[in-house]
Image (tube, rainbow, N blue to C red; front, top):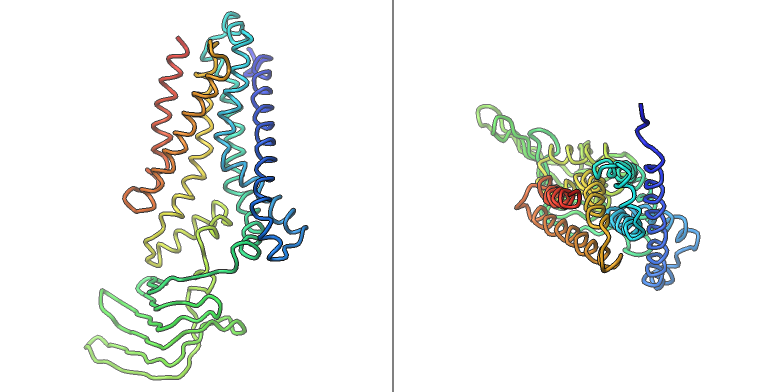
Length: 363
């Protein structure tokens, strides 16, 4: 029984991965130079320490940026080394040796699988951890501290328990014009109204100021209770008002799922950006297979125009793929398309294109 991978497979995989990591290294080096030149004034103005710039920002920025364009790097690598093999008649020699075109795809798909697995692990577990330091650095030295301009905040904090604030100040941890309603069987049974609510760090509790409580019994009789100050425990913490979308980038796969579920429980409906982020972490690695097949189909035939023609065609397809993903994402953010469908539509469309190109190339 022949081994799954043979010498020719290892040769192609070595070429594939070698070109891939070389491309990533070159692009990252250039990108870091440009990024430093763009942010050097911010670093100087904020007195950012050199150690923090190198280890907290750029060391953690590298996996984030690499994974962001991992599909494009994969595609360029396939186009480049496969075109070179085709121009040197290596592809013709392999096919003439009795290896079918379908069999030729095996090492490419194995390499794409390895890159896809690396991308999935990076996106769901490694990058969220590295983003903690990177995003904290950006908030401290580039973007400034948290800002929250959200007004008229409505949240369901428990089943049948609804909270409202006219606005929340993240610097003082004070919510203004706070109300808390309890509803059973679609009937209001209690409503607390106060001037403001403040988070007490020492007690680890909320303190409600200048409040009154309106309780309604089964017969519709009302009881009013007034008070100046009362401590309470709510299933919502100050950090939840400070959560930006990029804060979700600090969450691994399981933390992001838990966060989305907790927000759904509280009646938050505007979760499209979080759902897009979740689905992108799975669809991104899958794109390595699609772009690999397209790359091989375009580059495996010797072209009269040489490598340049293949690279040009490849870049047009890959950039149209990326543009398509951005367009569908806009529809998802606006709420007109389900995030799962919006994120996966480009993969479905370009899977069909990859299949057609593969069939054409294999003839």
